[in-house]
Length: 133
Image (cartoon, rainbow, N blue to C red):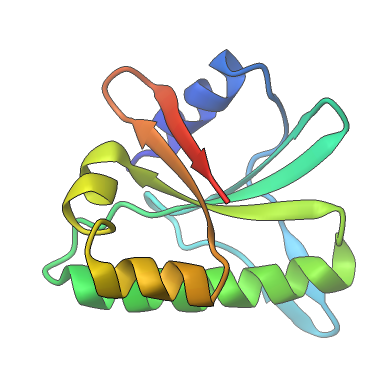
């Protein structure tokens, strides 16, 4: 759902998109994002390479959405470590999701515990609000 907004935000921020989507294959397992709002982008800026996992958090339960996002992020990070270790993985979420849900103490503790990098974006302005590492 927010794929295009994140892509445009990255381009506005000076990133060059190198893969859309970014396909990962580890051993005999291929990783693809489901068709829809959640996809992986890859971009490169000033010698830095990143991969972006975009999550909408529009399901019926933010907690369930968080469990899915956390699991996917951890699995994608492990896969990247094996096949593209130069890439840093970010979980992209909207500014509203960050302020409303990710501000909760348990979620903050989880993000810190699992060392999840966040890209917070404004979906209406199609701009990056914050990079959080």
